[in-house]
Length: 147
Image (cartoon, rainbow, N blue to C red; front, top):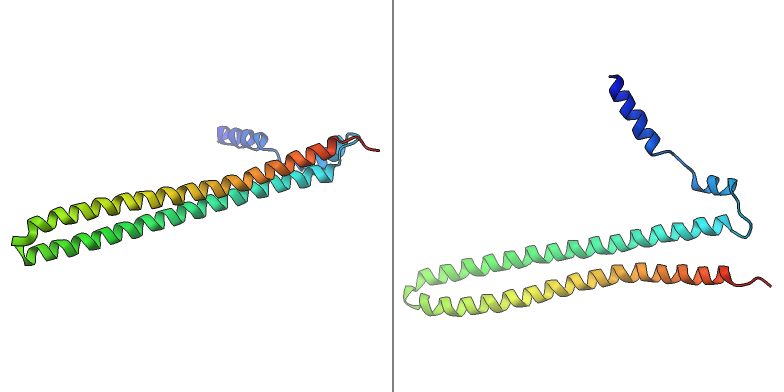
């Protein structure tokens, strides 16, 4: 029991509840606008959240499309098997045709999924890149000599 309490105290001590704004106010340095600093980092966090949202939506649509492709493939396979059972004489020639169509469809699907993943990653990176540029612009502005 004492060991459990010790672990609880250690974990609580490892993650102190600190108000960054209050801490910065205590150690106010001349020339640093604490409110602007906090706003800037809040915007950084919001940009990361937006990038994560975009990435998550991209992966969700990618997985949804993969499931749809799988369903279509199974339906096509079931239809082709049923057609082959109806006319066994034509089954061999039909199998070659079906295999070729399946390969072409699989390649098209892979291309589509790769494009979806690439777009999602590009959109998420764009949000972070934009925020990075805003940070650079802000830093340049802060470093300008004051008249």
